Length: 116
Image 1 (cartoon, rainbow, N blue to C red):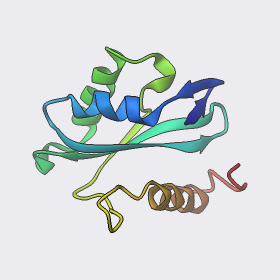
Image 2 (cartoon, rainbow, N blue to C red; image 1 turned 30 degrees about the vertical axis):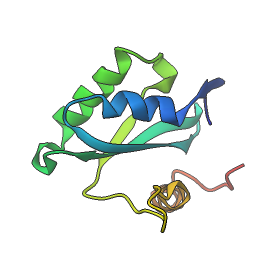
Image 3 (spheres, one colour; image 1 turned 60 degrees about the vertical axis):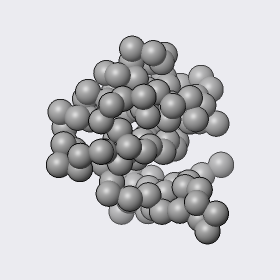
Image 4 (cartoon, helix red, strand yellow; image 1 turned 30 degrees about the horizontal axis):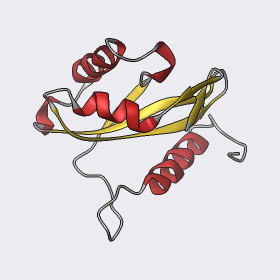
């Protein structure tokens, strides 16, 4: 579960909405640290047509989420990927995505603490 501005956000619910979009082949949703919201929702998306990834598609997918989800559940950021790392049994390695995102935030100077 993700805590965003005091609200409970369920990643599987957000993922399900993203996967209903006709351009999306697969998706994964995590919470990333945010100074204002405690955590913000970030989605990793594999598109059916990789060439369509970009700012316009990101906006379209966020707007798609806003049609169904409350404001705090909608992704604030979408990262397009060709693949998502998987475990040996074929499940997405959420922990690995979270760790890489924390590394990216630390490198950018946006996160210095330990995640609780």
